[in-house]
Image 1 (tube, helix red, strand yellow):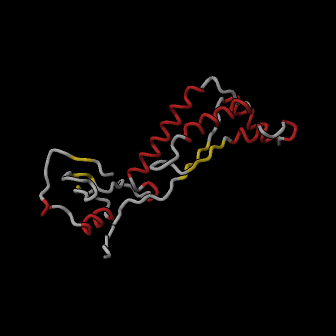
Image 2 (cartoon, one colour):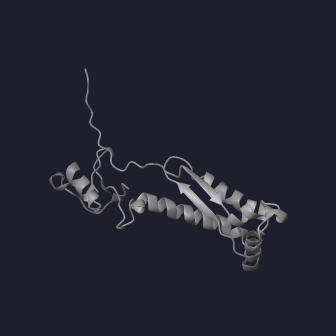
Image 3 (cartoon, helix red, strand yellow):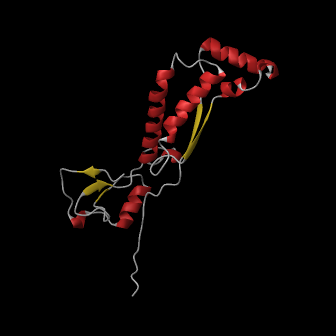
Length: 171
């Protein structure tokens, strides 16, 4: 996280050692440190863990990224309410809008990939006379309820949260 904190000082003798920082992080305690990689003297929150039993959402940055992605999708798609019809072309427009939002999040510090699937759209891609009675009912129900489920799968790459670098000069 390395979020800067201000308003107090921490003498060098009272700062945590690398071993203590690792132990605190393992115990899901967020210590305040003076990182060596940031020039000058400044205090920051160290590795930020969430207080959760869900190991997939252990780090604050992952939770923030997922929350931000969810917000962007909701904000970007809300304008389509009432305009997008439950037709093949209408739902393809929803998928394209979602892909446009998610494409901007791919990159360093963001997501590695994604997939967007709307089950009703998959049914609508099948010719009407080739659909099963259950598929026809699912489309009719979606149109009657004016509700369509969209599944978004996001791929997050591996994250490095703690680096321990030992420099060995060679002459």
